[in-house]
Amino acid sequence: MRPVLMFTATALIALAACTTAPAVDTPAAPAAPAAVAATPPPPAAPAPNSQAFARSIDLGSGISMLMGQGGNLGVSVGEDGVFLIDDQYATNAAANLAKIEEMTGGKPKYLVNTHWHFDHAGGNEVFGKAGATIFASENVRKRLTGELVTTGRTAQAQPAPRVALPVVTFTQGVDFHLNGQTIRAINAPMPTHTDGDVLIHFVEADVLHMGDTYMKDRYPFVDVGSGGRQAGFIATLTRALEIAGPNTKIIPGHGELATRADLEAALAMHKGARAAVEALVKQGKTLEETIAAKPLAPWNARFGGPGSFINDDAYTTVIYNELKG
Image 1 (cartoon, helix red, strand yellow):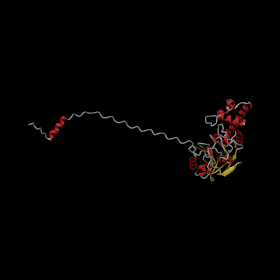
Image 2 (image 1 turned 180 degrees about the vertical axis):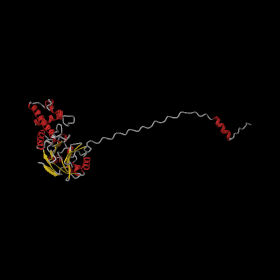
Image 3 (image 1 turned 45 degrees about the vertical axis):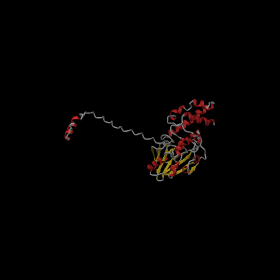
Image 4 (image 1 turned 30 degrees about the horizontal axis):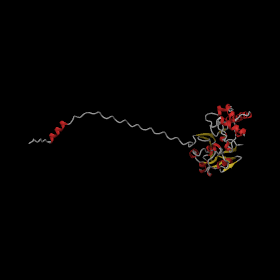
């Protein structure tokens, strides 16, 4: 008979202690690196021409020049309400309206378009719906309705909605008597930037808004497809200088606030440019030969800078074609 081994619980525990492998010290696992916070993506850029005007320049007598995306705005504020010149783009009209209301304490009651282009009258629909009565030259309404067909780079895809149309139009100018001012809307003497340009003169405050008949220190955009003519810039700036005095504050369609001296320099450029191109036309030069001759070189330093929408070759082309036509 085989012997039977019997152990007590105590003995078993003791045996286990003797036979268990000794503990081995193992190095601790390296700590996981701290998570690096992801860099947030940069904010999306605002949509083009969607922001309200950025600068307001006080011109005295409750009148300001507002600068931002699109053409320069003019605004008069007083006891008769808010009078606005131009309204920039459709895409920033709501932002402009909100900022004007914040700045003036009210929505514009009166709105005058200096011409029909989308960077000056594109906000008509928004401002019309907000209660503004829109005024403009007769041809502005005709361009916006499509009664006058526009061709070229500013051609409209479709007519403007009814609420965006001027409800009061004029062909010989109109006077407003508001906010202690005589505000005189003056038709350009002949087609200039377009065939519907208007100057706005605050008589007592001595402020003159030129629309795009004058863009400070830039060659002009002669919108031939809207009836514009280079000769009109000479005629209209001559008329403006008859209106302006030595201290008149001049609001250009684009660019910084200007003076009478700036306007005189622009008129001299228009006259000189026309004469220089005309001399080459009389010599029988082709358009290509005329452009190559750089007849506008004397004015490029001031009017042909990097901020210019139109360069000297483009302005030369317009003058040449007008003289040949």
